[in-house]
Amino acid sequence: MSQVTRHASGDVRRYQYQEDLKSSVAKNKRENSMMMQESGFSEPVISVTEVGGKSKIRQIKVTVYTSKGCIFCKEAIEMLREAAGHFSREQLGVEVIESRVDDKPELVESLDIVAVPTILVGKSRVIGLPRLEELESLIHEAMFFPTGL
Image (cartoon, rainbow, N blue to C red):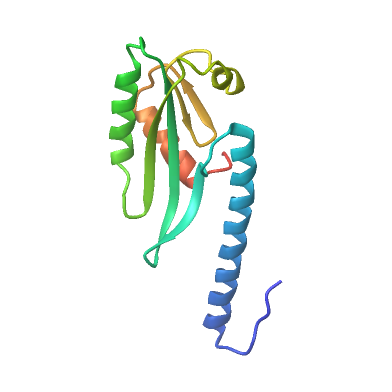
């Protein structure tokens, strides 16, 4: 619980908001840490960050699992980059990462990848080549509803 000293009521609310924000960030870091341990990721999937004194609302990490002979994988990556480009880069970052699974059977097994492309956006998974609107919707959901709907 935060201490409140004598200030104008606006200052008290601002202080409480800052304390709530700090608490929320700490909770997100704990949840991201657990998700990273479970998934093997080395970076947070979703995070609240402060860059140059300005808040970035969310940073979304999108991973596309591909293989060498996959005819739809390149198209999936291009579509994801297009979908990511529709969101404001000043307030959030959408990072698209390609991960080839050809020589990584342990990764395929641990993430239960049954076909490629397999796309992970936040806590959502898409197998195959989705529509652009579906990708945009998944990015939006991960940005504004990181714990699901």
